Length: 343
Image (tube, rainbow, N blue to C red; front, top):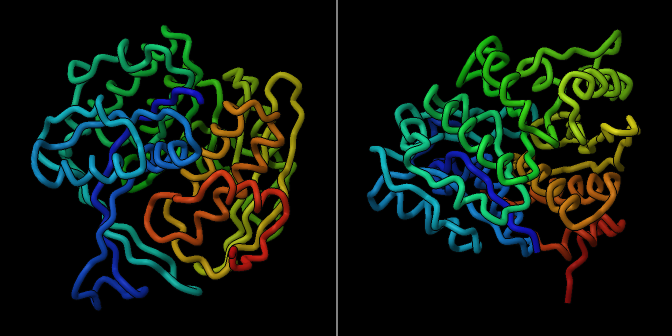
């Protein structure tokens, strides 16, 4: 199996039970998660050797976050113990036409104040095959943006393939700041993952005359965006999940990919995911599926189908982590979505 590295922030997640609004809740459900941590757990579940790089405070809450990763066989030896606090996010899970809501409490967290001096990146990327990061980490702080670039430079110096999930978060930074920072980081990226909003807000790409936000998926808009992105950054692959939100509980789910060398474009099969149990981490499980498919040697179409099936299944699992197995994913990708009891 491949050696894979992800880097980002793991947070304490406090979510309202039973679809309650914040004002109703007298207690919260506790989970741990975060973009790159979620990817790490998925990849470890598929049997890969995965290391997660982050910083957590040297206190019991930091240890709980590390333990949550160890439980799922994610390597934690390169996690720095520094800083004062673990980031927190509060989740109010929506239902039907009521959208979910997230409140961040992550300012001055350990990863936001960490520097490259806290990590030995040459050791981290020794014999590594793949490095994954997201646009969330450089958005956390200027220090985190500098840390991300230091990691990327070390990854490329060690011959590591790099993927990014653009993941624009308007509550963390502006589109102008995102474009300034992330455009620079794209020079290190081989595989770029992100939906049409990410492409526009993070990198400034817009479709031609096609409205990709219309009720019907207009795939030509994605072809336009993907071609622009490959022209500018020479990505090996550009990938996007395609979510059709009929309601907070009912989504259409598919994806598309372009081979940067041939410009061949492919749209996956579509799943109707309803009722959704928890959509948080859906994009991360998709990114992990793309990575797993490619490092396993699947062609880009097979990797995309694997990713879409994996992320469709994540919507049925509470918490940030996608806890499905390879067999689960391959069964669904192979056409069995019956949900019959396995005896």
